[in-house]
Length: 126
Image (cartoon, rainbow, N blue to C red; front, side, top):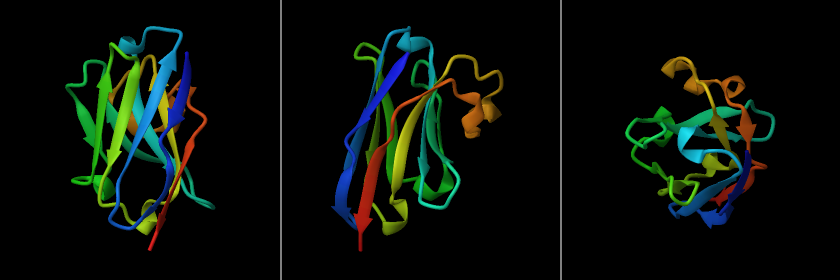
């Protein structure tokens, strides 16, 4: 499967962006999807995840109440709505797909995801 992320950009603090991640090849509805981010000099970190049907969602504490993940299996796309953006949200954002997560707790680990998008830069100015 190939993942194509888009929607990043430069925004002022308090602003919003909507990221999209479109999948091609493979059966999108069978993939557990996640968003991660990586700031310069830092490790890639978990942001949010959504299960196959969209009924089970998880967020990192630092985005709860500000970010919303969703998916449209008919369009083979997962979205990340980011509101109330802060300068510390500045990072490259990656979408990822897992074909067999095995355990729900594994969603936090980048190593458990099989496919990655190319990343989209999000820059939040103060």
